[in-house]
Length: 144
Image 1 (spheres, helix red, strand yellow):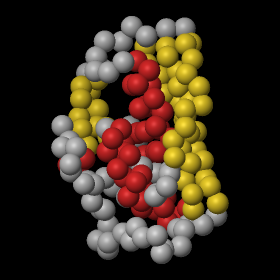
Image 2: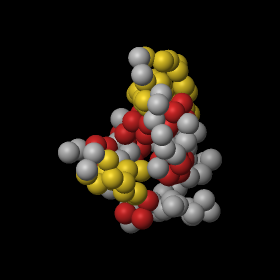
Image 3: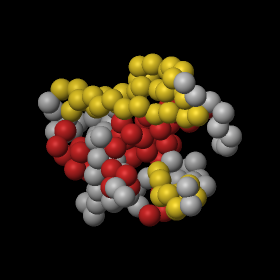
């Protein structure tokens, strides 16, 4: 479990300047930073379908977004019941030199799912991480 006081450190060798005096960064630079391999200590593993699944917890994804995409925002577009699934559509918007760039994603959870957290929160977390992956964050973790 990640210690809530643990700070996410940049993976890059050079420090990341996060100052009010810095002009907005280009989306290309933000995506390049978010696409870097994640620190191994920030990844978790769980068994799913007989396989080990490596993943990033939602709160750690938020710390990476805070670090590399200051002033980003998250918006839940909808929460719907689709058959046996709770489905969430959400978006992340990142202000950058080119304007505000938005990526949208879905998350879903079976209504009858038993495990950690409630089904709506779990679907929202999935949507957040999937939208962040569209900016490069942990995208390589989705490759099989």
